[in-house]
Image (cartoon, rainbow, N blue to C red; front, side, top):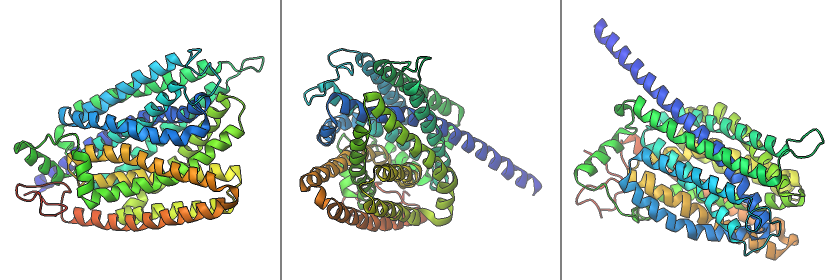
Length: 479
């Protein structure tokens, strides 16, 4: 009897040791992901405003939706051809090379930032914007797809908050490093680096962080035994059955087909859509404030990076002290419901003092913090009881096309609000925010309820046995 108890304890210790190691390495990887993401996203708006013009940012959102659609088709083909961690390593290296190429051309006197004449026709600014917009769906999103494929619902409640906290540390350090480079002055009180060199250095650091991602992922894959990388066991068995039936390759449009077919996946899309469409409105106002308060491109970048630094600092507090505790105590459904309710409170405060630049920054920081530190890990956990095609392909459509569609919708409202004029600013924005929060809350409640039912019955969304493909069932438990 004692030997059986001892064996059980030893087995538990082994499992716990490898699970802890797995999530520590995932946390380290996400540290590098967000460190690079912080730099690229801060430069995206400042570079575009400097080269093309801040007034064209809404048009850029439309363009990015079209450009990224073709990129998703390539990505969907790669999902069928490459192993999960190869995919993440590949995109990290592609973006590392891209950062170095753009850094080189920043110094070009005609197309780079040395040319201070902003113009709609300067294609280099548009290209950098589209490149930056792809970072989230093709690096951040692929990271989470990989994490979801090797995690269980219990892992999500226990570990996702810690992974996110690691990323916030990466964001804080990255933003602080960038601010240090931009504000460094010599003994004469002059900037130590020129605008061009400073921005080149920022992209070089982003490339360095991106190159560190494959190193940590490869080490994870070779140091943690395969049996600890199954994740949600029902999904693992479903994928194994599909492989035995020769159904692993599903085509480049499979992701969007599953998105449309399953209400559960459409609900995840809704969670992303409502956040992005709200964030675009606040982000546009923030960029206008940044341009009004700045005299140079470095001033704009510093202002945006300061916002990002605040976002990551607040996000670290939320993720480290709140996300894990709330997930374990309240569960997925109530946590999903907290997201629109919290953002609704922030937007209400914003509407009372919408003309105050400080409150614009406050609203931006709070919306970003809640999303990255709480909403993102909660939302990512929803992908766990799904098949690989949904985790990777449908997710890419949601995070790329769906996200950009939401941003384009927000940009449309920005153009409409600008056409209405300052006199109708409060009623127009108030009606817009109330409508979004209302639909967001309903989606969160229904989605949370469905997730709990799936886990309770050990079911998988997207698993289809022969003969069940058109029966209308949303999830089938593998036999």
